Amino acid sequence: MNDFNEFNIYKLMNAEALIDTYKDYNPFVDLVITSPPYWDAKDYEGNSQQTGYGQTFEEYIDSLKKIFTGVYNISKETASLYLIIDTIKRNDRLIRLPDELAKLLENIGWYHKDTIIWNKGKTLPWSRKGQIRNVFEYILFFSKNPKEYTYNENQITVLNPKEWWKNYPERYSRLGIIPSNIWDFTIPAQGSWGSYGDEEKLQHACPFPARLAHRMIQLSSNPNDLVFDPFAGSGVTLRVSEKLGRRYFGVEINSEYKDLFNSATKLYVDSEWNDIKKSDEERERLLEVYKIMTTKLRCIKYAKLMLKKVSEKYPECVGILSSYEYYDKNEGGYYAELMCDFLLKQEENKDQIVKYVNEIISKAPMSKYNLSVKIQYNKYEATKIKELVKKYPYGYETFKASEQAFKSNRFIKEIPELIIMSDIAISEKDIKKIEKAES
Ligand SMILES: C[S@@+](CC[C@H](N)C(=O)[O-])C[C@H]1O[C@@H](n2cnc3c(N)ncnc32)[C@H](O)[C@@H]1O
Image (cartoon, rainbow, N blue to C red; front, side):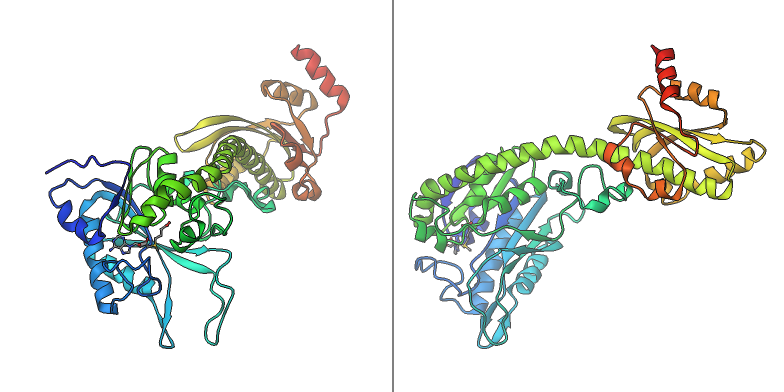
């Protein structure tokens, strides 16, 4: 068995020949991102060997079968494959290429994991009877092994939570929100290529938007992995792979596209790259803030919820003090250690209260907060509060245990490190006294 070492190569060949050319090679592909011709929909510059154009449907499917068997053979056991495809209309009938090709790939051995809708934003401006104006294509996602494949979902999370994230922080991963399965990536418009290369030809090659390739590569590969496209065309996938520190290998039948790859595509991807890099860096920065904010919000809501539930049943429970220590790493599945001190006006029912609290926190939703919680119960006395406050190193805020306080989002704006919720408001004077005692 040979080891493949033609990295970072755009190779002119018929992809049907993959099966024989690399039959003696150890599997070397980590990720396939590709879009084959959509049967006879387009003539890619009249190469008579090309798949699709000028072929019957059976010939087209046979050619793809040969190509994707070759792709399967050179793919590692842990490889993934993205196929971008669409339906076409022939003789007043919709030809469901996504269904046909999904079946074909499954028969070869690939596992169909998901279908994503790629909203291209714009497309041909027409519609016709029985066909609404089409703005999307299908992204079919496969893996070679049903379970073992690279899937870095934390790399593609979005960090622009909706307002209600603040009120339901326990429902959000602190690593951000996984995007939906509708992906909006506008196709590069004529003109966005600048004046480099042959713009018209590039359009004809149906280039992927750089950001689309970027998302698939980040989700399904790691640095230094090999990304392969057997229908390379303009080679956007290859260039983006290189930018992301992956190795690439592209195969294409039409030599004119190789020229484009070296001229226009390089310049197009490079011109997009500044923006992509900037948003990647901004995302990294935001992620740190997001992690801390989500944890803080969880801690605050947890303490508020406990107080609400307990004070409803046991009115002698007049407040709660709480503070937390944030874990930078997810320690034992926990995001933070939350310390809480219940304040009880009388202690007769303390045992029942403890039991009730344990019951509440062992069940969902409270058990889902990923917080390591330490709870203490204290008899409420004004002086004792001052002592308790001292043991919290971060400072504090006061809240009244009224309905209003639970509804209010005042805590959201300031995100205090320590909260006291009770009908006992600590006066400014008291605070000053405590501060003085501490210093
Ligand atoms: C839909 S385009 C791919 C566009 C590409 N995703 C991009 O970003 O530019 C399909 C490509 O497959 C090429 N092609 C067609 N038949 C082929 C074959 N048998 N082997 C290799 N390439 C082929 C065409 O020349 C065309 O460039």
